[in-house]
Length: 388
Image (cartoon, rainbow, N blue to C red; front, side, top):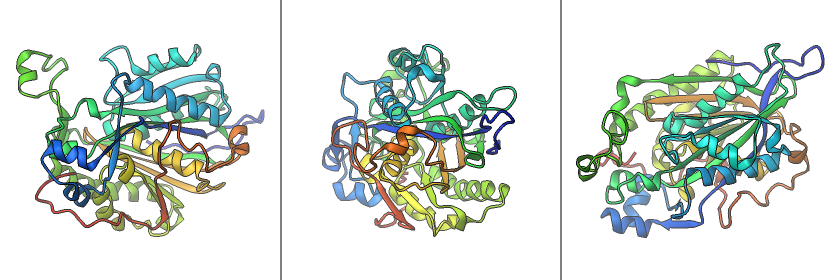
């Protein structure tokens, strides 16, 4: 799937869709490696050596995915200078919804007061935000191709609710969070350039929550056997990402006639700091700023890309006309990439904002790493344990 940033229409209306504002939210509870290590039967050093993660956030008992999504949404709308009433679409990327139904997006829509917006969820696991971004960008244009409306795209997950905290393969990796962007009209030649979305259903068993759906409804047996917990074949997932992520990056750049050196910013899914450190040299993006927050946030699934993007934006790292490459990969298996040209003048609020303050819609959230050609400074993991 591809899309191109267009020129202005004959009536002066934009035909290009881009990001007007960003926002994010992290729960207040910072969970250290010491706490996770005790439950999972490993050491703090083991977690850091295998994942590059130092801490992650867990949602409070009173918080669900929609609560995190709502706070990120409010921050993004405020940053963009857009009211909820101006939204025509809300898409929430999540694999940990509040309920099997209704859609978490509908709960967010209600609490925002976005009465004119259609709302739905999208589940592509850790690739979800890129899939949702691509979907929303294609639904915004009018039949004549002009862009007048606004969409809210949110990635939000609460994996602390579905991980077995005694399972070292998964418990050490995941945290909770939400990130959001507001899409709308931008200047000609800027905004979303194209996307590439791929699914590999033949490998669907690598990442899964086996029970709780129509195949295996909740029962005493499924609960006793722990089939409601998230599970992952770590080594196989590593192999998939190592093979498919470089291909996905090459594919989208080749399709648009771009050399890797043209990329100014690379924002990948924050799966595992060590895994990213192993794969980044194979992507050819040596001149790009690599935006990483995995050490402080852990793997926040569909939230990880918009969280890192919000950190970069509010730190003033993204300049007008910079070329951004977003890359997600996750269960399904799925891989999604998006290329966009940053429009720093897109939103009045963004133009007036004092960058570097209030970087998140939560107290005590830390900024992620943003360094040119910087890779995680952690040792490479042994492939024997499969902490992917």
